[in-house]
Amino acid sequence: MAASETAFVTKNPKTRKRVKKMGFDSENDNKSTDDESTTRRRRSSKNAKAESSSESDKEATGFLQQLPDKPIHGNEESLFSSGSDFYNFRGVLNNCIILLVLSNAKQVLENFLKHGILVDSVNAMEHFVRDPYTWPSMCLILVSPLFAVVAMCCEKLLNKDVITAKSLVILHVVNLIVILAFPVAVTLCGEPSPVGAALALSTYTVLWLKMVSYMQVNYWCRTAADKTKKLLEENEELKKSGRVWYPNNLYLTDILYFIWAPTLCYELNFPRTKKIRWIFLLRRFIEFVFILYALNFFGQQWIIPIVRSSVKPLKEMDYGGMVQQLLTLAVPNHLLWLLFFYWFFHSVLNMMAEILRFADREFYKDWWNARTVSKFWQHWNIPAHRWASRHVYKPLRNAGYNRLVAAVVVFGISAFFHEFLVSIPLHMVRLWAFTAMVMQVPLACLTAIKLMQGQIGNCIVWLSIVLGQPIAILMYLHDYYIIHIDTPGRNGTDV
Image (cartoon, rainbow, N blue to C red; front, top):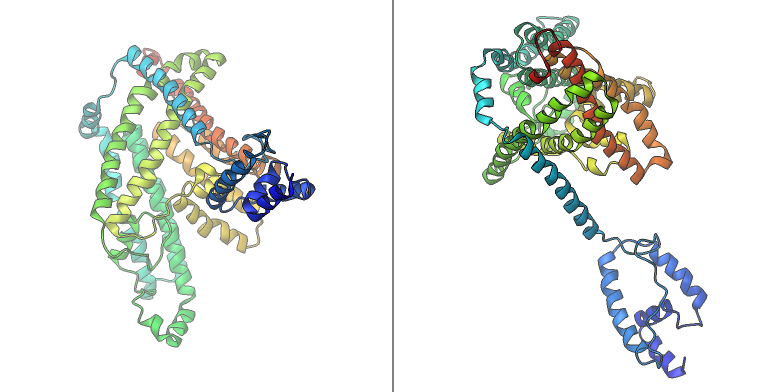
């Protein structure tokens, strides 16, 4: 390279760097390689680097075009190589989305051609209103707040020295047992529809979790009463802050607000917004109605025909047919699950929070990016995770138990309630949901291994969701068919 050309290059540092990268500066060729390797590892400020790189490319290209051989080659990495600075694969994602839509559109078309229109929302509503067997579930839901009022009254009796602390514990334990036993007895005796029974049992499960939190928080406040009193005496600003202190929280409106608030963890002072955003509330209500209809549509039109067609291979123990039905059910079931997640955790909970001016809206985190099973369970249901961490995991850890024991207890409680919400409405106990939840512990340990972390761990999480749920559905369908359908005088068409 001529001296004049070298001088031209060294006038602009960005141009000099570009020429070095293309291999035309032999003076610092070895150092250039090290600098490039270091630069590739720096992934911050991508936009700024892209703009500066574009300017330097133009200047370098202008210089190189003055050379007689018009060079066009340089030291460049392929875009898919790990050494490349390229990370924008949005087009590939769009292609995957299109392929997914087209493949499912084929199944939807085949479904319509084979079964016609199966959706009948009016008939479903008429069944819910007219069928007397659904009323026990409705009555269960309506009377559920009474148990919360009982818990509040027990706390008040202790505060007024009517009962002892030991008597309060006994009353709380009895109340918690009745909260779970009462809906089970009504469901087994009244025989409501499985959907109505599952809804009622879900309500009482949430109530049970809330009452455990209510009982523990009030206990913490009682034991810290002297410390709180001293704190208020030393800090006048805190005393005038308007915060509620124990036992001033023991009144009806407080417990009723907690019952309806979209959280499982009790506090004496919940964060509140200044006003209701009516436009935001309207959007969530529209989502609530539209997605609820979509859930009903996909359930009747897509899921039920697949479930009915699964009866024959399950009855005949045709393993090939069962695998086929599993794969057929996986995609529509997963889409239904994703719709339900958005409907409940975003639309319903945000709508309730907006009406109650409840300020904490972190109902979920980016569970879809979870690279371990543990992270998935920590991110996908924040209210449940906070309850488990606050009232089970941390107390066990503080009591001296190791992490594994605390995690097993947490997943054991979760497994119990998953089985509780499935077995009781179906009038059979098969422990498939319980086993699935317990197996999350070894699966969490597997994805915690360094080799399994990253994208491999994320794929394992997704596979456990996409295939795990259809497997459980088919197992319960098989057992339900054997117990309730495969009887003399009936056939699988009743499913």
